Amino acid sequence: MCGIVGYVGTRDGVPIVLEGLQRLEYRGYDSAGIAVVGGGKGGLKLHKAKGRIRDLQSSLPKRLKGAPTIGHTRWATHGAPNDVNAHPHVDFSGRFAIVHNGIIENAPQIKERLAAEGIETTSETDTELVAHLIGLAAREHDDPMAAVRAALRRVEGAYGLAIVDAEHPDRVIVARLGSPIVLGLGDREMYVASDVGAIVRHTKQVVHLEDGEIAQLEPDGFTTQTLDARPVQKVSELVDLDAADYDLGGYEHFLRKEIGEQPEAVERCISGRIDERFSTVKLGGLNLEPHELRAIKRVHILGCGSAYYSGEVGAHLIESLARIPATAEAASEYRYRNPVIDPNGLYIAVSQSGETADTLAAVEELTRKGARVLGVINQVGSAIARSNNGGIYIHAGPEVSVASSKSFTSTCIAFAMLAVHLGRIRDLSPADGDRVITALRELPAKIAAILEQEDQIEEAAGWLAQFENAMFIGRVRGYPIAREGAQKIKEVAYLHAEAYQAAELKHGPLALICPEMPVVAVVADDELAEKQRSTLHEIKARQGPILAIAHETLPTELAERTIVVPRTEPELDPILMNIPLQLLAYHAARALGRDIDKPRNLAKSVTVE
Ligand code: G6P
Image 1 (cartoon, rainbow, N blue to C red):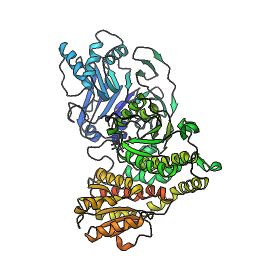
Image 2 (image 1 turned 180 degrees about the vertical axis):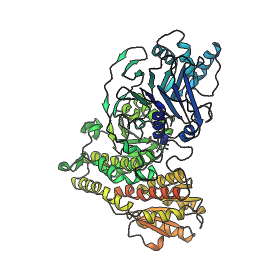
Image 3 (image 1 turned 90 degrees about the horizontal axis):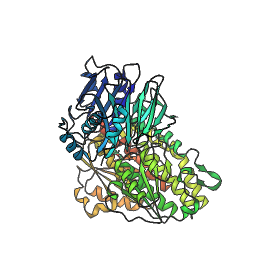
C-alpha cells in the first residue's frame, strides 16, 4: 500500500526519491507526490499527481530540485485518489510538509480542534490534519522535534511519517507507530523509507524504528527518542538483501521472475533445517520445548488471501503428518467473531509481508487473550513477526509482484517442515519422516522440471483466456490449490474464476457446466484418483472443457488438455500442482494484456482494514 521515501544530504534528492518510490510501486498506489525544501522560510516546493510515478515525473517542474526531499505513493483510503488528496500535505502555515502511511483514528476530534482554531482543511485526508497539528504545536515549541512529539501525542491510530520543515532545511523528521519506517545510513547523507527495498541500492546499513519512536535525520547522522522525549540508542544493522532482487533482471514481469526463483527459494527455506540423524526437521525459531509441542491439541492457522490458502495446505499437512486436528481461517473474519481461545491450541499467523492489518489485528487479539501465536513470515523483523511468540521465516527473498508466488510455495514448505517436526515428537515414524524429508529435498528439481513445460502451459493459458469464466476444482488436499489457482487468475488476468471441491460440483455448480465453462481440475493420482475421474466424466458428459493438472496416469481422453506434474509424496502433491497454475495465470494475464505486477485495485501489503 502507501510508500514513503526520503533523503537528506548534499545531492539532489528528487531523482533519488522518485527512483525509491518506483521501487515501492509494487505495493499498490493510485497517486504520488514529492516535497523539497529549497532553503529558508517558505522554501517548500511540492508536486503531486494522480496516477503513476511516471505521470508525476513527466509533469515535474524544472525548479523542483534539492534536499531534504520526501515522497509518497498513496493508496486511497480517506478520500478519492486525486491531486489534492495525494501526499505530501502542508500545514496551514506553509512550513511543514508531511507524508503518512496508516490511518488516524481520531480524525473527527482533531478536525473539531482545528476548526476551533479557525483552521480549514483542503483535502479529504486524515494526513492533512496531522500536518496542521504539527503547525499548531510549533507555535509553542521552537524545536521541530518537540512540535512533532507534541502533535503526535494527540494522534490515535497508526502511522509511519516523514516530515520536512521549511525553517530547518537540514533535516527530515520521521516517526513510527504501527507502520514501518527504516533509516538508511549513507556517507554524509541519510535515507528513509517505509520498505528497505526503496533504498537498498544506496545503502545496506539500516536502522529500524520501533513503535513510539521518532527520529531526526541530518546528513551527518540521526538521533532517536520516544514520544515523551527519552533518548533511544539505536544500533544499525547490515541488511542481507541484494538490490538485484528488486530489479526485473531481464524478465518482462516480476511475477514471472519470482515464479522462476522458486527452486532456489525452496532450497533456502529447507537449508540447514533437516536433521537426518533423527529423521526430522529443526526449527530454531519456534521457542517451544518438545513437551510444550506435545501438549498441543489443535492448530489454528490464520492469514489473508494467498497466505490463507497456504495455511489451508498447511492444515492438511499438519493433520496428516502430525495427526493433530488443524484448520485455517481468514484472519479478516476471525478477529471479528470474538473467538474462543483454545487453551491447548497453537495459533499460527501466515503473512508474506508481515504487515497485513487484518492478520496483525488477529494476532494482537489472540496475544491479548493469552494465546500462543507463531508466525510463518517472509519479511524478517516485520510487525507480525515481532508481535508473536516465535515462528518460521520462509526466506523466500523479496517478493515484488502483487500476486504471491514464491512466498506461497515456501510457506507450504515451512508447513511441511513444521508438520514433520510436530509429527516426529508424536507418532510419525522415522521412516515416514525420511520419506517426507527426501521428497522435500527433491522438490526444487521437480519445480524446475515443471517450469520447463512453460510453452505447453502458455498455450493452455491462451485457450483459457478466451473464456469469461472458469471453474477450478480439487479434492481434500487439492482444494486449497484450486482456490489459490482461481485467486491467481482473478487477480492477474481479471478472469472470473470459482474454486469448488470437486465432489461438491454435483450439489449445485454442475448446472453451470457447458461448453463455455472451462474447468481446471487438480487431480493427483492419490487415494481419491478414481473418484476424481468420475467427476471429470460428469463434466465431460455436459461438454465442459477440461484442463487437468495431473500425474502421468490420468487417461488423456479425460481432458482436452493435461499438464503432467512430476510425482512426489502424496502429502506434497499440492505444492507441485500449484506451479502450473501460477504460470497459467501469468500467461493468461499476458495474453489479455493485463498490468501483471500491479493488478488494478490491489495492493501488495494491505495495511488497512
Ligand atoms: C493482499 C495481496 C495478496 C496477499 C494478501 C496477504 O491482499 O494482494 O496477494 O496474499 O494481501 O498478504 P500477506 O503479506 O499477509 O501474505
